[in-house]
Length: 403
Image (cartoon, rainbow, N blue to C red; front, side, top):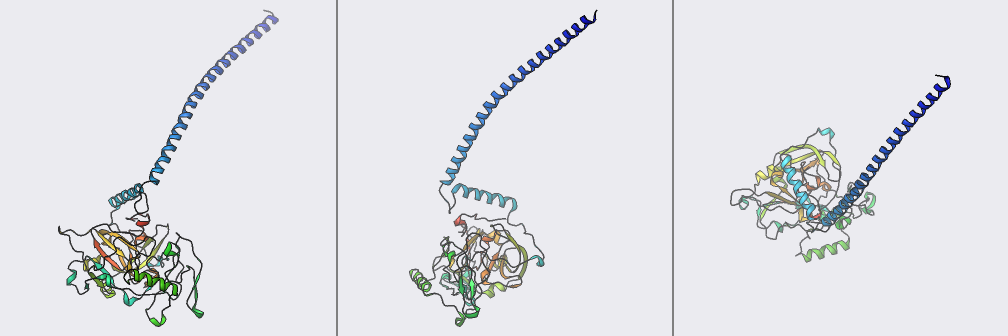
């Protein structure tokens, strides 16, 4: 075979290889195009389906929101949300119960509790006028503290003489400052009401603080004439008694009716119990917490000393109701929570006597509950078998408030 013929055969071979490669490439391209078309068709179907599903979900979600938003309200919160709070409470009580102990800490880790809210504390309470009302106590008539009508007792107040610590209420904005006191001792009250009870918290605005008063008339701060006139008019309208329920949530449904019998306890009746110290964490639902050194008396010991009257079937009432003097702030608890060994009637904080802005002479510390359940300046403790009213529950919060 000549050299020319061999070159032609090589060229033919190369042409054949190129043709074969071209055919294979074209075949692959056809397959890829076919697959791409199938993927595009399927993707289009899925994309449309996704859009339809997303649109249906959006319509359903919006409809669900509108259903909740338009549902009848139960204490300022829609009934479905209230039912969910109740379900959460049942689950929490089922899992954690109300017997678990809160952690305790060394005293050197504690600090004085920040002030936050003065509901029911608009003015200083005169210590000599303090009585702790107790209602529903077993064999109450046989006790020396018994009276036919605990509601007839009148608490006495004075306006604060100087500004206390600045409130740190995160729920409301501060208001213009006011001056408290006279002469060189005058101070600016950053909360704007000078302790007269006419500050913005009365309308749901910023809180003001209070400091201890000794009840001596020569040192009392005179109220503004406008406030005195308005206060007198309200008292006259309510039988010359101090108006009740003057905070945002209004009057409690469990406020005692006139003529309710019970006990009027003096501080000595409480402080005769065994004293306890406790260093636990105070937790606020606003998201902050502090370790605090508390001193006082176990609520369980007070309940043991003044036990609830049993029902006809021999069982005990399920709940305990508390409110401040004259009923501006109030809370309800299960009897089990009140019998918790760490539920404390506090008379001291950080090793010092409790200040009025912290709820003197007696406040509650219950470390298994959020702070809004830990009522300051307790004026009434009543046993009841019906779940009692609660200030913040009426404004949409959870009644249980367990941690």
